[in-house]
Amino acid sequence: TEAEVHESELLASPWLEHYVAGMGHEVYGLLAVEEFWGKPLTTLVDEAYTRNSICVFAAQINGVVVLAPLRQLQVITERTVVFALAQDELMLHGIARAPSTAWKAVFQENSMRGWHNTSQTVVEASAELYDGSAFHRSSMRSTQAQDFFLPPLANDGPSNRRGSGRSGRESQHSGGSEESDQNSSLPQSIGSRLQLQP
Image 1 (cartoon, rainbow, N blue to C red):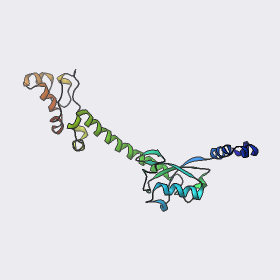
Image 2: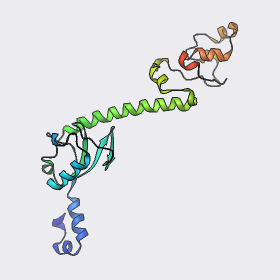
Image 3: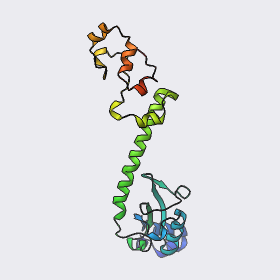
Image 4: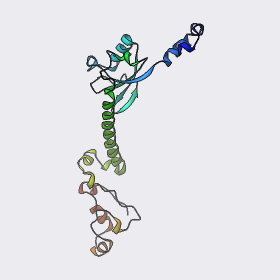
């Protein structure tokens, strides 16, 4: 702290003065007051530093904390969580909504929404990667999760295939091909597009 550093040292080394002052700052999460709703992050950054000498350096976007998203965040809402460096919580007055802990619940909700949206995107992208151009996002959205079956492994016997509805012995007497047996375990919208390998 400044008390631990001799004043002559601070005067002789300007960088040390700034460094010691910076050590007295802490990171605070906050929700901006209504004055900033509908405005870009750059406005909040400028006003926060001009009024209270606090540095807004990050914001939560789609559930993820992003450093200095000055271009990405063009509209602040009542659910926009930002992070700032300040000497104490009193410095947030006029910038942050009360109570000071309100941002935590919103941050958690935003994170869960972001995780859900990301997981949905990963499932759709994985499906397209699995079947190349044959899969379309519209097919994935219309397919129920419980109806989606992965094709059986190469060493799986007929009795181990899920959704076939027939045992290995029944399959041998049915006269149907193995390929048709595999396709029968898939939803019609998907099975018609997959070229399964035995």
